[in-house]
Length: 309
Image (cartoon, rainbow, N blue to C red; front, side, top):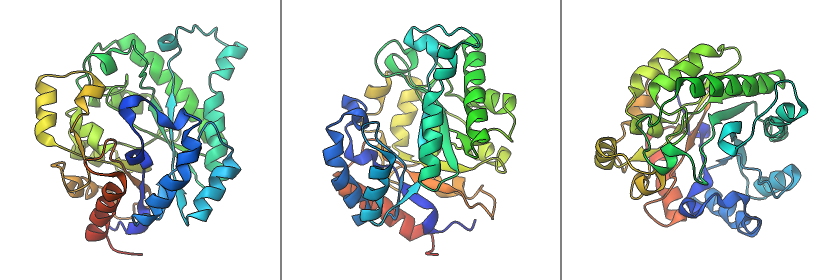
């Protein structure tokens, strides 16, 4: 393994309150964002996961990064399932074409920030009516083969759009979404050609869902374009597997800064090819300490385990 510190970025989730919703969509976050980016840089990280707010221009975001001496790392895109939003799309219709407008927007953002990779995920609906979010997360609850096939088609079409734009989409698994378990992830990766869709696993979410993480990394090692890295309280994970519950409640006291939990992150990263040059995005969705301290602890783990360039 030849990873170095320059490949690590941080997702600024530490500074948001996910229990109250997706704060990035709130116009009020515009006023908070400069401090968040300044503290991310102060923590030691030189790159942050791309997050152009829906309330700002790409130019404004790029300038904020530059002011703080930060680079952008690959961003994240969820593909919404029309049925989850009470929408029926007529094949070949203008409405169906427009359903992928967000994909095109993310492609523009990715290019504008000098990137060529994007994490692509099934949507995790948080507003109610999503059984895996509302009832039982991490165990493949309410599985439906037809829905998985439908989602695979949607992900494939989004990946084709991105690939045509010169962006390498990397499939990103997420507990609480309709592509959550190893079997569901493998179905997507088997159905969509590697030339169209890479892999961008979240190591913590694979662990939570009970997957053979090392086995999946080994099997798809040449397909991996980038990774998300998170640590977890493994005792809590064992309890959640035995007695699964709603996503939001499950994440209470679950996430920890890298090295403070029990997920064997270094062993997992050791499965990457020696020449792996992709990004690794560190995430602590709900930090165990104050946000800046959490980011500093995360960077300390990176410093302790990986060389400078």
